[in-house]
Length: 202
Ligand SMILES: CC(C)(COP(=O)(O)OP(=O)(O)OC[C@H]1O[C@@H](n2cnc3c(N)ncnc32)[C@H](O)[C@@H]1O)[C@@H](O)C(=O)NCCC(=O)NCCS
Ligand SMILES: Nc1ncnc2c1ncn2[C@@H]1O[C@H](COP(=O)(O)OP(=O)(O)OP(=O)(O)O)[C@@H](O)[C@H]1O
Image 1 (cartoon, rainbow, N blue to C red):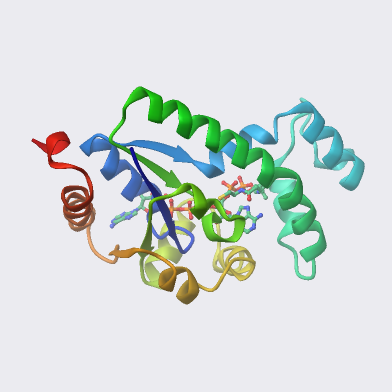
Image 2 (cartoon, protein in one colour):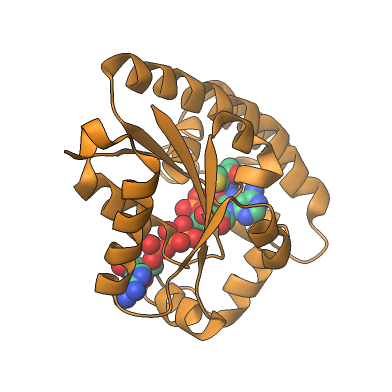
């Protein structure tokens, strides 16, 4: 099984690329979703409440991700973000490894690991290839607005990640997502044909 890590700027289209791979026969692991599952684990909830108080909980006792985002992406909050990362990243890594082993045993041709923080967290060690999804800042902002984020939220989060140039340079290949979804699907198909053994494709 080939494991392909997907990185790129926020709202560059990583999930759209992942879905294009799924249509061709790949399975997707979403690190954001694995992170959300970790935030539902009672020991994690208790540790976060110890640090930031019960104000980070929703009325039903779950972690409010928007409340935590306000804390960890605020200016000068690096120590709080590192605290969250040190708590959650090893747990996310365990989930990803377990899931990848399962997918491998099921005989899937490819697994796509959609993880914005792939390089920062060292999860590229789990991957055979790393694909960088490139999209102009203006397109990314438009797409981010669709999920209720303004330019400031996009900039705050992006400032906490490795510079895009470095992410791109450390990738195996680049996929351009400044055009239509059809353009994107065509490029994904080309990578699939080049990277996945022909017996799967025939
Ligand atoms: C901070 C939290 C509560 C915000 O939740 P929210 O639903 O608003 O965002 P979501 O999890 O969907 O992430 C969206 C994007 O934000 C960025 N982001 C998330 N966490 C971080 C982080 N610790 N550092 C930098 N960027 C981050 C990524 O680009 C990610 O794709 C949540 O992201 C979290 O628990 N983060 C720590 C775990 C983690 O690193 N997850 C990302 C794995 S790729
Ligand atoms: N080429 C495109 N044309 C039109 N819409 C697109 C295109 N690429 C992505 N989108 C849309 O833009 C939005 C953001 O894309 P997507 O969710 O794939 O980004 P992402 O990189 O996974 O985001 P995040 O960084 O938050 O994980 C989605 O609604 C998606 O359908």
